[in-house]
Structure formats: structure tokens, C-alpha cells
Image (cartoon, rainbow, N blue to C red; front, side):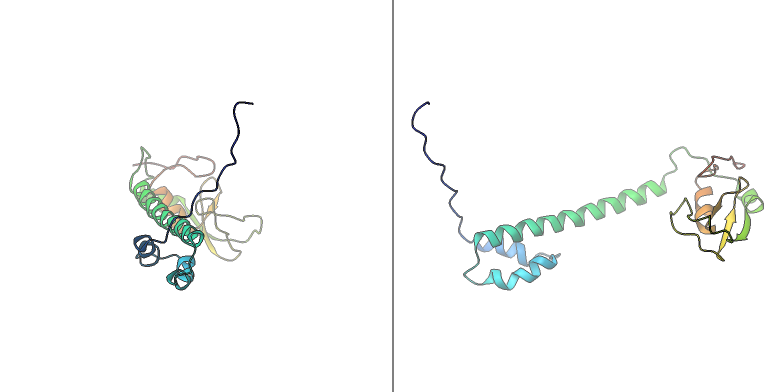
Length: 157
């Protein structure tokens, strides 16, 4: 053994600081958890552990807000760009899409929006016989002239 080993001391606890508290409880977007903890943190008996927990929760909440905002901006930017895709010719799309009523229970999901196709609802059938919600396939064909399932090529501009 190299020398005498000394036991590890736990870190000393920090003292309660007013600026940390004001950031935690008076930020514009308070988490539910911090709002619930705020009355307890205001008294002089609040522990450093409570402050740390509140700080971590608040940081997580703020990160979640920033992530949602970034994803929203990214999605809108993605939708506004075409990324080299060629739209279908609008005048022929209406002729080639057939409006139908969903009758078969085997057809379950619109592959564009991934939502249920309900029996009795109106839908559109592509020439390749795949079925989609009307709004979904129209939006899709404004971006791409291919069927989203089988890549059937619709006439393009």
C-alpha cells in the first residue's frame, strides 16, 4: 500500500443564494414541479437538495421548450423546401385520382399521415390502387410525383 489512506469526505453543502432562487421560481416559463415547490423553497428551511432538484427540473423544462421550438422551426423549414422533388402535374392529378368511400376494413392506415382510414369515410385512390386521405395525397403530390407506397410515377410539370 502506498501511504495511509484517508476516508473521502462528503462535499460541503452550499448556502442558499437569493439569485438562484429567483431564477428558479420567477422565470417566464415555470415548470409545474417548480411551481409546486416554490412555496416550500421560500421558507428558510429549504435544503440545498431541494434547490438542486428544482434547478434540474427547471433546466429540463427549459431544454424541452427549446427542443420543441427547434423541432417546429426545422419542420416548417423542411416543409417549405422541395429538396429536388418534382411535383405532379396539377391538371392531371384530379383526373387520375379517384374519389371513393372506404369500404374494406383491411385498408387501415393512410401512409402519408399514418392515421386510421375509417370505413365509410371519403378517400382517394391512386392509379396504383393505393388509398389515402384526400388532403394528404393532394399535399404529397404537390411535393412529389411518386406514389408514397409503390413509387408509381404520376405525370410531372
